[in-house]
Length: 70
Picture 1 (cartoon, one colour):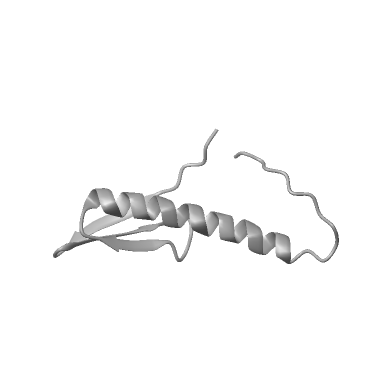
Picture 2 (picture 1 turned 180 degrees about the vertical axis):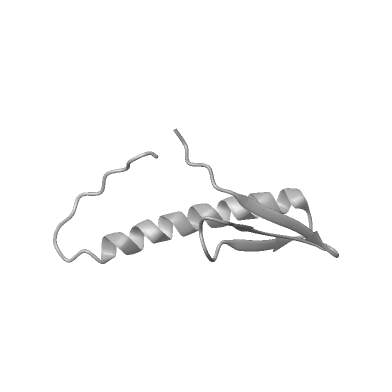
């Protein structure tokens, strides 16, 4: 089962802007709606991967990484 996130998008002048409500800092700007949605998805995936890597590096002892779907 995949997790679903909420993209808020808006057309402003010549640009489409958007952000992911659940993940602060994931925001993008593109010329078309389609490009914006694709860029938001890529940026979201990068943010989730970075967040997981950062959490793993903060642990001092040996650790095991297990993926849990929500």
